[in-house]
Length: 274
Image (cartoon, rainbow, N blue to C red; front, side, top):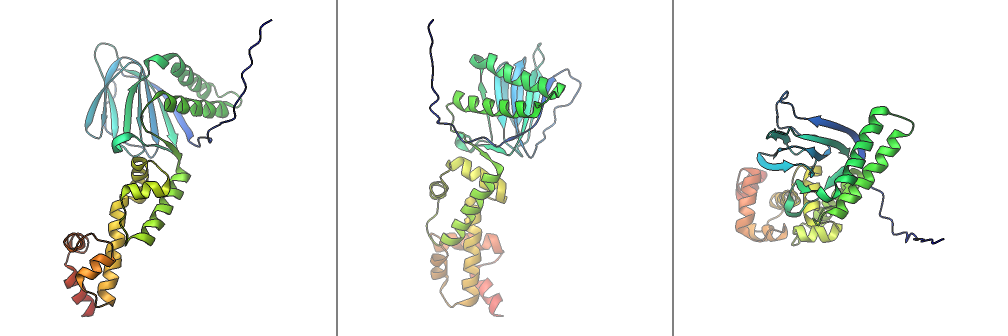
């Protein structure tokens, strides 16, 4: 009797904390309108049959059988069917995950034709479990979701990462504190990515989602606030205040200050003294 034994190496990646919200099956039958919409969670789409297009923030992308689409939270999108074969797809809603894509994109579309058998198994099994709701169906679906995401990461060559929303909050708070403590120094997206040990595009997108402004916009806000305090409480020249606040030049400082405060730095100083 021949026996082959393969030992685990125990290099297990950290558990993915995304929470499965729902899974649905849809078939386009011209009985509903395609309207742009968004969700506060990420959606994964797998096209099982047919062809059509995905409209994502006013850009249209063709999709066909075996295409996989990932759309991050709060990104406007909708799908449309075209051709003689109606579009059929499975959708998964996932809370607490945000993907980072190359080039600051908020979505990704790629073909999974070679993985059709695996993907159909994960999707149909989750759909069946959520429909029948037998004992421990939630655990089965959650585990299948984690396997699916790891398979997608393995499948693609794109630089995208996955992080739970709790981690996103912690990292964004750390970045905010770093900016607040170092605003007078030269800070770039590369600086913040190196500090946070995150992919630059993912970091910028996560920060914008969490703080409602980009890291560079937040940096500018902190610098303007620091300059306003110096204008009100010191006799430093405008040039000295611009440098002390971290601005690269007086002209750039003047431009940012007027845009933020609706007046020049000199006018602001006069208003404080009066």
